[in-house]
Length: 72
Image 1 (spheres, rainbow, N blue to C red):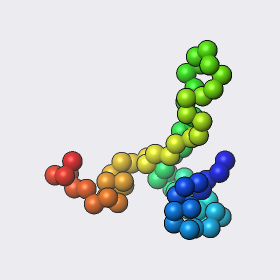
Image 2: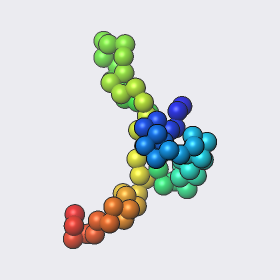
Image 3: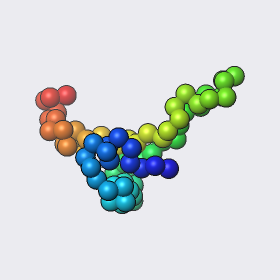
């Protein structure tokens, strides 16, 4: 698994530091990773080839973006 990708390049963070942050967020149950989706169709390729990360509690993302209940 490559935890860094475009986010790491955009912010010029060290890959090891970024991986430690992701691991800490996983351990605190702030984010969870969902595997790539493969509907078992005739094609051998997966629809999504990489896992996606989601906030476990959407209120954390809303707070980070500064969204209030009135703004939703």
